[in-house]
Length: 88
Image 1 (cartoon, helix red, strand yellow):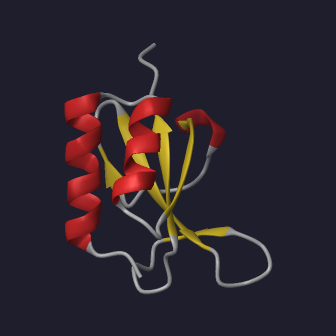
Image 2 (image 1 turned 180 degrees about the vertical axis):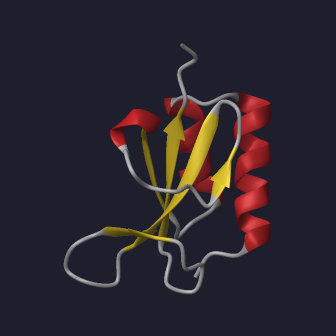
């Protein structure tokens, strides 16, 4: 389970430190046992983020089953995808 408060804290960290591998590594250390994945937002077409910002979107991962999948349900979420938005 991931809470709205955790999502807000994660977003604040990304806004403060910037969206990069090092920040995602920091998130992994400070928000255990949440799983974090980092990618570009265009790698996730046709999905709606649970939290949208100018420089990034956050998506939730449900890892309860054998295969990972995206979810919008905070109760079943086990991880967060940090998806960087590259300005055009």
